[in-house]
Amino acid sequence: MITVLVFGDQLNAQIGALAQAKPETHQVLLVEAADKIGSRPWHPQRLHLYLSAMRHFAEELRATGFDVDYQIAPSMRAGLLTHREKHQPTRVVATEPNSYRARQLCLSLGIEMIRSDQFLCHPDDFAAFTKGRKSLKMEDFYRWQRSRLGYLMDADQPVGGRWNFDEDNREPPPKDGHDRWPIPPISELDDIDREVIALLPEDAKGALPHGQWATTRSDALSRLDFFVKHVLPMFGPHEDAMLANNWHLAHSLLSPYLNLGLLLPSEVVDAVQKAFNEGRVPINSAEGFIRQVIGWREFIWNMYWKLMPEYVAMNGLDAQRSLPPLFTSESQTQMNCMSHSLQAVHDYGWAHHIQRLMVLGNFGLIAGINPKDFTDWMSYSFVDAAEWVMVPNVVGMSLHADGGQLATKPYASGGAYIDRMSDYCNGCVYDRKKRVGDNACPYTTLYWDFMLRHDEQFVRNPRVSRQVHAARKLNDVDVVQKRAQQVLSLLDSGDL
Ligand code: FAD
Ligand code: SF4
Image (cartoon, rainbow, N blue to C red; front, side, top):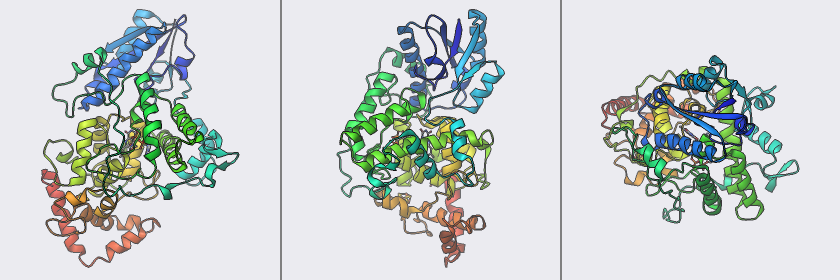
């Protein structure tokens, strides 16, 4: 027999090595590795989602006739060695794993890797895109993907005559905050879910699993269906909005399933294309969503492979602040935007993109938090985390620690942006317009301090030079820098 080793984020029978396997000739190996489980203080919903989805997947494979060896082992390596000893497979194969470390492990254990088709653009295809280009821009990649994959295309032209409908999107939240955001479905917990919940560490930080995250492919498919029918038509306009009374707005909540393999990007985008063809979704929503999946997601995936293994350790702005206690302690911060974003992380192990980028990530950037520490925190706190997606998004996009290889400008902003895109500032003790004084908005103070700290680095960057010049011209530079030091010491002591 040949053994197919399936990693916990490859839970799909239609991809790579599993797609070629048959119950008569192949056995499947899944390993729950104790060293990985114990390596970090995982959010309980994240740990639950991974373990429960793996256990459900093993059962589904058994139901299709496969003999599945489900190992609970001290490590991946130990699980494989035990399997080899017991079952003596003629070969062990695996779909190319999604992390650098797992690929190294496969190499060291003589596991044959089969080309992965879990993503829409394999790194070998990406090489064709990068060839001859001086700079790698997501927008160019996205257009290249649209043309070659044929989504929202009319022969060789974009449907609707434009590649990008961002102008129609990115609206601030509706003034009344409205309550028409479709309520995300909940799944009933089954025996496997409960068995995994019983294993969760008692001191794990975060709300216990409550059915928010589907743990099977069939449930994930119904979430996709729900999204396309009820949420997608609203997706575009409010993509970047944030509201205190709503954690999900019109986001798909599909990232955990895409990242585990429960859903494939092609079937998600096909469903959106179909809804558009049938006139059920406006072009700005369909285009905005397809851009996220075939553009951003695949760009991030490929930048990870392009810049690894160095990527994880990059720290281009020399940010050395340790992770402040507000991210890990129960004590409440007074920053309203931060408090709501952290509440979403606590309750669901999830926050939407603008909370991640412009509240959490932006703060990490302007406060100078160490990229490795920040990536670690996000990795164990979010249900959809994986190294390939966290590292480019945190080290690259948010903390600008990769020297601008992913994003050509640092996503730094003060309270004004958060105020424009949310209703957080109205209920905050801080004043988003003030950069000095005891009630100055920490974002505003730290934003100016960031521009002053890194002025030499950014003054020649055409996308931020205006802000650097504005910072240099402030008439209260010394007071701003002094207030920034106060803010940072309040941050370190957990009193901000
Ligand atoms: P939607 O808003 O509905 O978007 C649709 C889909 O587009 C997502 O499901 C996702 O698959 C894809 N997508 C959009 N933007 C990105 C992006 N920048 N990178 C990768 N995929 C993208 N995404 C993760 O999947 N896992 C992470 O660990 C993760 N960490 C992030 C950390 C930071 C600091 C930032 C700024 C972004 C991060 N993202 C991550 C990207 C994005 O925020 C999430 O994919 C999105 O919020 C997930 O919610 P959703 O499925 O409702 O997304
Ligand atoms: Fe956040 Fe500043 Fe607005 Fe308060 S005033 S919610 S800290 S941006």
